[in-house]
Image (cartoon, rainbow, N blue to C red; front, side, top):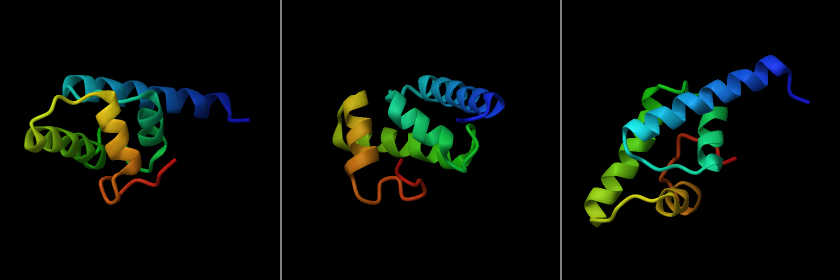
Length: 88
């Protein structure tokens, strides 16, 4: 069982990532948010911001609107898309 302080810290990281993604207009599923929060990258780090920029770049290049479905597919299924993150 995870200690209460660890769980609270993880939840705080999730809140920060959720807010950053919202500000950048990148819809993320709770599963992706959780994986990002559990990574070694800080919630407001260049690593996480880089993932959000990759999502935005993909949408721009493909001329599609980002949805949770698209970001999930890219994050979990596209080889090399998020190499800096260990898949949860």
